[in-house]
Image (tube, rainbow, N blue to C red; front, side, top):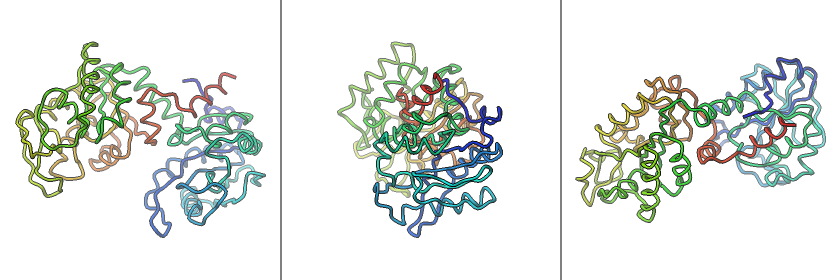
Length: 397
């Protein structure tokens, strides 16, 4: 994917003395008192800001936070806590600028944080008038917010159309490189794990991947629907019987290519969806009418782990069982550790996946951990993200 990279501009000295506008993703969770409860996104945005400051640029950074009403700023919408945390991480004060679309005062070597961009009228609908005003603020526009790359908004798309120079920040560039390595030019065998509660929410992903991957591992409620498609009993487990034909079509599409969708041969069941419910391992064919399937069984987990260890590339989206309950976490843990032990290049994304990675402490053993939930899913669906599209267009001149 050919896009201009901010790191290259800095290396060439082209950012020195320039006004640089960085669209970051600083949309962090907060408690009822507005205190930040988890700052991963802020920390992930620091390298781009430091790169711009080191290059001698006058730096403006903005982000959305929450879901404010356009044109109706409320104290709860403010990036004040973000400015404070960013200042701590950068080791300098980061002034917060409230009404900024008509002009920003910032000197080379300094940084300011521009208040919640989604408060500006026209941001979500990508109003050209707003986009042009924002583009006029800077010499270089940098998109470093992969988490919003699937949205064509004022600060993610419009400004990139009109800015003198539009480029990808280091975080966005890393996502592009990882996605290209995993999906565009993968080392084979290419294995994908797609898990979750419903086939319907990931059907387009399953169809798109069935044309690319060598192994399509399904888990969670999705696997239950595929078990139905294979003629296996699932008791009262979560599934979507009306999508059984769709699941069969995916199985057939894979089979036609000499590829496979491994169907669980054993499962872990319980009589109730509770953390302290008694866990019982059963052969897949022996699931009773009142059983709930809450995890894959040890034989299935071992078989999948062996396949993953032999893979060349692994794409992971979703835990294969109710890993939050320890009795039903073994399948996900086995899969996670197999990915960690594999020599394959691995890319993982999605909130539950990241929680599983953190639970088993394998962050350093996954090739790339994607920072965007919705954007990551749309990439797996085979969609071209708006932020990528406009940056490619600008790079092509």
